[in-house]
Length: 274
Image (cartoon, rainbow, N blue to C red; front, side, top):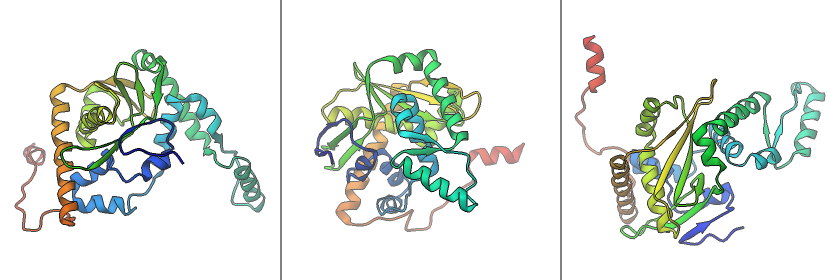
C-alpha cells in the first residue's frame, strides 16, 4: 500500500486507497453543505458506490488513459446466464478476467463514442495531447481550521493547468452553467486550485471538459469566471468552518432545529401566473 503523507502530492494512488483516506474531499463538503447529518451518513458508508459512478470512472479511464482502458477492461460475452450452461460459462469468463472491469457491449460502444468525441474535439484533444499526469492525489491541512483535506484532479498539465472531465446531460455553455450551480463545480475549482498548491504543487488554471453520454456525444471545454471561483472559495471556507465546529462540539444536526418560515420559489410563482 502506498504511504500517504499528511501534506503532499501522490501519483499512482489507487482509487480505493484514495477514497479510504480520512481527509475531507469536495464530495464530503457537498454532503456537509446539505447538512452535517448528511456528511456523517456519508462517512458511515451510507453513500454507496453506484453503477453511474463506475461508468464515470470508465469514462475517465477511456479518455485519459486509453491504453490502460484496453488492458483493464473486458467485453462481456453474449451469454444466457439464466441457463445452467450459461451460468457456468459466465463463471469461467469471470475467473479468466479476474481483477478486470467487465463491460457490456452497449456500454463499451458508448464509451468508445465518448472517447472519440472528446479526443477529436479541437480544444479537448489538444489538451489531452500534452504530457500530463492523470489522477493525481493531493493532501493538505487547512491552516485556518486544522481540517485535513484531499483532492484528486483528473489531469494535471505543466504550467499549473488542471483539466477536469465532466459528464453532462447538456454540455452546451448554458446547460453546463446550470450543472455548475447544481453540482457546485465552482466550489470544486476553488478547492482544487487552493488545495493542490497547499499540498506542494502549483495550479492556477482550471478547465472543464464536458461531454454528453448520448448521441451525438457532444463535447465542450468551459472555463469559469474569476468572480465565480471567488464565490466557490467562500463556499468551501464556510463548509470547512462548519466541519471544524461540528467536530469540536460533536454535534451533527440535519436541517433547522426550529420552525422555519418558507415561501414558494420565484419560478413557481411565475409559472402560476402563466
